[in-house]
Image 1 (tube, rainbow, N blue to C red):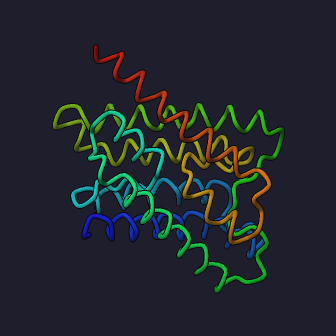
Image 2: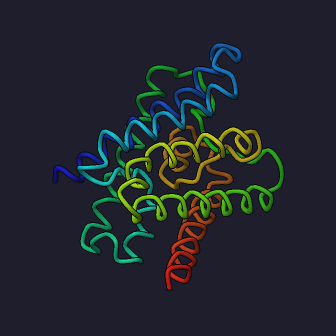
Length: 212
């Protein structure tokens, strides 16, 4: 249960700070800025991995958990509890932001700026890249593991920086699900559920092939 609660708390802070930076940016007419939002996402991921990595692995992302289970790097019996607690953490964060900023329309929801196909492909590639970095840094030597939080947070920052204006840079089903449902903007939600899970899963398959 401590591991499950750790995932809930870590995911709460991830969504609260990440989407919160987007909400506050909208509420303050751009005071946070696009760069600030990207940095916030990268920092909160890095910090939560340092804080909760030793307890739960700090997945904070159903696509990551699913891939780890497929690769037998995480117990199958913990799959459903992890997904539930991650989702609950994300929803608690979005409801908290709704309470704090009731007039905000999107609450940090991920919405495509262009076509659905464009955002789907971008989210697929970005999640593939994220998952590869996670696997290569957390399953390698001591030095790689030591710097894994920085590498993973750096990938999030990078992807949010260049693709945020187009897709919202999700790479995480829970991160997209909660603000979409709470804000009522679920019209493009399928992109961020399907592309992220499939991108992470393919990355796991590629990682297995590369090792073999």
